[in-house]
Image 1 (spheres, helix red, strand yellow):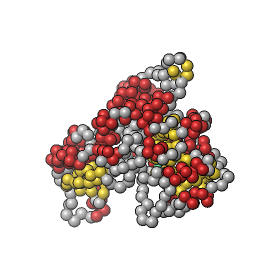
Image 2: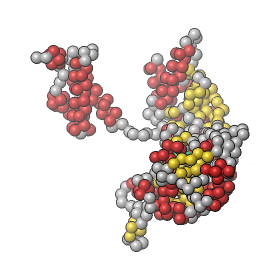
Image 3: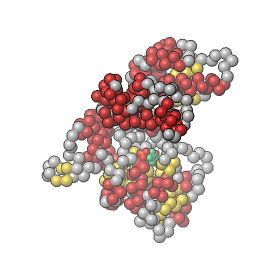
Image 4: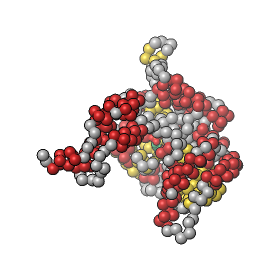
Length: 482
Ligand SMILES: *Cc1c(COP(=O)(O)O)cnc(C)c1O
């Protein structure tokens, strides 16, 4: 007998069969199914065996009770929800990590109705013949933007990639050096260009690009002119860029298509709602550019999608690129998007029904009133743990729209109670723990850490009881931790 198997012999690990026959585990199997329970039991036993062989400290007799407890914990993880609702109190309305736009109930109803069974996604009911899935969106998006034609894909990154690949595969794309942007980590213009099979031709300098720079860069391999809406940062000072209008003139005279990546893609003029001005898709098309791309789940306020709108002949070329097939939308999102676009036909209804717009437009006064209303409950819940101060703050739109804090808002600033003489590292530990407790709630509450405080911006809190109803549980957790 090897020393290893000798070691194993001296510690008793119950067999899987024995475990499965136990009363409690056999009940668990009835709920979750024997197959997953057996798999997890095997993983637990293997883990124990490895621990023993590595000589890690372990109890001598591994009881069935301990194994049952471990099994339950692991099953709970396996069967836990995927993405689940959280309260976005970060102050960023369109927060990419928190799923961007909240959908209107009109969209949710439409999505559920097609999720439930078969639908005429690519089927023309009048003729009984095959149709095209994008047709459910094209009429509305053209009406709302003034475009001749349109198509829809998985997201705006896919839209940009598809346009580049369709018009400039193995060819050059002219783009201003000041517009080679990165949007939230994984979307970097130079990388997208290279995976789309196009050659990047940077034009001008970081702060200044002239029309002359485009003219000088043109050669027989140039296939496309691109302009990117650089709304997620600002270059201030000695700057110059070439307007869509001038760039279109240049592109037309050289017979090149021109695409503008508008990113956020406002369909209606936000400034009429006293929000910061963002160029609308219609305005950009009116300047004469051939194609505009934009997201469905940023300012538009719908489910994740990317739109490509513009000249009929150009959209027709995109539609026959086999890459489009790999980027197409599913029935659920098409149904949701159509319902969102229908809201845009009635601007009065839109500002009430579309959560993104409603949250962006929410007046400071109304948010401040809600803060006052729940101040006492918040303070009581954190007595002896953290001090609660009312804070006037600024929210931001998020997702590449104007990055500067622009929307006057209100919320709470929570600072862990200052125990006398507490060390600085412990103080920041207390703050991290406080934020973690908020995140650990059944509906996690996500705030923002700033200057030694946890900031909760209430702009996106439409139903205050979703926060206050969790405060007793929060207090319980905080007191039991310390
Ligand atoms: C957000 C953004 C993208 C990426 O859009 P997704 O819908 O997230 O894929 C591309 N370009 C610009 C300018 C953007 O703002």
